[in-house]
Length: 268
Image (cartoon, rainbow, N blue to C red; front, side):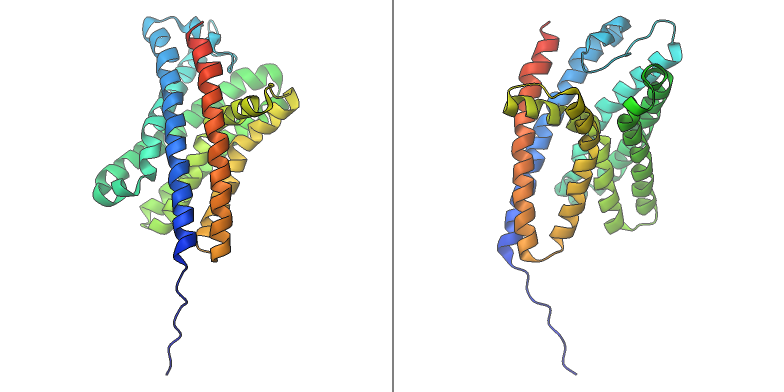
């Protein structure tokens, strides 16, 4: 009986997609460290010194500190601390060399990442419902609340796949969870990338659109990437172009975020 031989995959599309993905990761890592630098520099001193009122000096957030709301202030502090841990350890989960040579670290760091993602989302949802939604209504804050709910769902699915030793499924769910967890980070890149390219701030309506795109767009790109990676050569080449374009926009957003926002707030 004759056996069917599977056609060999073209090497160029794989190399192109892998190279584009590596560049995307390098840009992402740079942006994450800038984000972590701001969190540590802005919230660290004010929190350790007990000057919680200084939280409200962040123009990107409202209702950071509310006098008399001990539970809400504690939730906000926990949310920020968890965000720092997520940024610090999250990108390490994407490095294949760590998965291969230090699987124990990958497993424990992954557990810490998912636990912190869940706790940060719960704290964020508490803040949304007791502060933002209570003041402004659900419609104007639905985007961030929906982001928090998605984090809980995707983190649970990634954990379940890991617990059942379904490694292939776990990696896919973990990647989805990673980009959704970083919705707040991607929102800043969308906004400041737009400012750099358009030389003008986004309108109120566009900002609302960005609030949804900050996690739905990266999630959609992950789905396209996963399908293209196992697809025909032209799909991998096309996806490489998309990843390169996303990396360029992210780089513009990082530069704008640092020069306009981080330096502006920390030097004020």
